[in-house]
Image 1: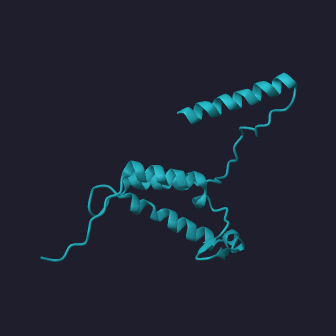
Image 2: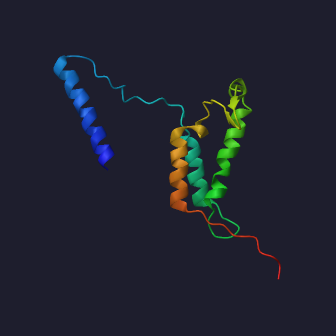
Length: 132
């Protein structure tokens, strides 16, 4: 809460100072937003719809682990599309690999959505048991 209030206060200060000295504000325009999906909101809607309408094997609802598979499928489809193939550059140092991409399923917004979704849905596992 404190961080948001501080951010709000700083933005108000920048706008007030810009008016006072007669300059264009340093902030970027707040809209209009593009009509195409750059951050994965459409995929988020697909996951939410699946979480509401899907039925699991164990429970009457699907687990987070099940709905997140849509993201994997979406990412593979992106990587095999003409645009995704052109993004094929990667570089590595040590054991990790970095692959810059414009794939909406890899955006910060979608990562935050997935984290929140997992937190709210919970993560339940059913261990494999031996047959008695």
